[in-house]
Image (cartoon, rainbow, N blue to C red; front, side, top):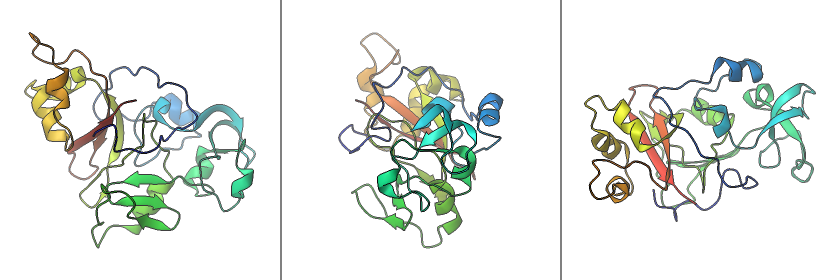
Length: 232
């Protein structure tokens, strides 16, 4: 994905994005994270806690009063908290999963809001006619992803894919069955696949690192991996 395609950040208030370490394939939220989130697990988000946008360490939920890790409501939608009153308020993972507040998401099949899918950007394709309305609700009750620009949630098998985390070049090599990280990268990447070759320095067989942040998604039905990337 080119840097110019995404128009806003999923974490507009965040400082410069932290350096991320390599991830492992098919990651799930750690037991410690699940416990901190009151044993809430998200169907479409299995990346690390640090990749959850608008996540705040210690707050009191403005909706149920429970203390603990919460999400800022400033960039969320909630029928219980008027828009002009959301700044400074927070909601816990339990309330998010219950739908007491929700997040918008930019996806391959449209921008998803509380009113449904809307074609806003050129990369928004028409959704399959039999796309599950249950999936739309589930994704709205899923944390946004911390990105440099704007998240783009990928789809496969008529469903939203599961966010796994971010990968560096070494992760592609480690997760390629034949050790060919470049081949796996090209299989997973639809837009601007030239990134791999452009990041490979003369005399190297593969990139040691790159300027991009690569977001990995896995299909919950067939297991295929896809991804996209952006940069600051």
